[in-house]
Amino acid sequence: MSQRIQFTQTGGSEVLELVEASPDAPAAGEVRIANKAIGLNFIDIYFRTGLYPAPAMPSGLGTEGAGVVDAVGEGVTHLKEGDRVAYAQGPLGAYAEHHTLPAAKVVTLPDFVDFETAAASMLKGLTVQYLLRQTYELKGGETILFHAAAGGVGSIACQWAKALGIKLIGTVSSAEKAALAEKNGAWATINYTEEDVVERVRELTNGEMCDVVYDSVGKDTWEMSLDCLKPRALMVSFGNASGPVDGVNIGILNKKGSLFVTRPSLNGYADTRERLEMMCEDFFAMLESGKIHIDVTNRYPLAEAGKAQDALQNRKTTGSTVLLP
Image 1 (tube, helix red, strand yellow):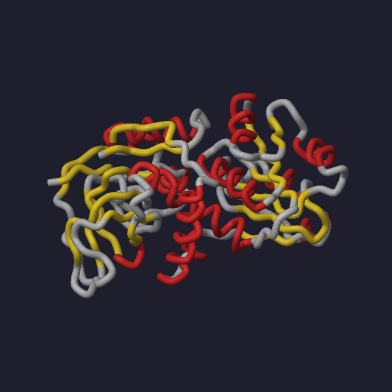
Image 2 (cartoon, rainbow, N blue to C red; image 1 turned 90 degrees about the horizontal axis):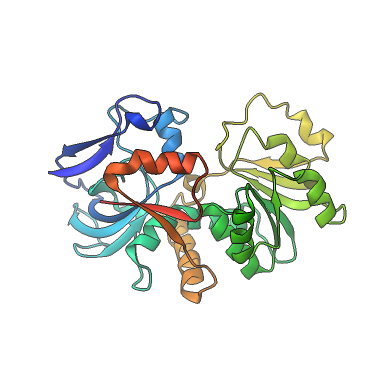
């Protein structure tokens, strides 16, 4: 038997329950992983609350983890029992001692990356990879605005942007978070609880505004984010921490400067084995170089997954959080 977190109805963190279950044997093309550490991400909360529908009930939760392969299905050739591995894409069920998933979504973990670092950073690191290197291929010298710059994704983005020679302006909610973002390489920070973000961006850029805005907050920051862009610049909406953006009149993009907008996702970029491996190689190289350091600041036992989600949702965390089975 194996322990896992599941939910039978959507709602608050109280709907999460720890249960005993027999781990699934891998089918053809699958592997089963004995998790050593599990990643915690906002998308997990979206599934728990019903913003993103789970495929069936009861449902497991979580898409990111790291551990050791303990069973291999027929036809799998790039992995074997005992391999150190990590993953960041579905199906749901990573909040568990064992997780079975398609082998094509699993990558071998280099020796220089420990399990906690991998579980805390695979989804976030690959997200930053596609945001900065593919959604808009930053060359160096651009000025960008990145919301939630002290969070898990933001902390990696600050470091990666600095390595690329990008001026990253990060929004934060406190002086402590501003200091963390600046330590990680943010060119400047804006405390949105005390400052007008648009006016501060205008001051920092001498009126030129930003080449790209990266917004994981959603509803609360949508229009303000558009106002931080240069004409014909790009708005990247990649999350819904304050709720989804809806009811948008597309004509607003014209009104605010013939702007572009995109709503990317990891699955939309890591959609083939080859692209996943390319993205992982890029991210792992940044880790090995020391240009990106993952700060695992929060650790919770698997049984306290709800408590961990509450801390994340209420913006009480900085850096990354892992669950330990």
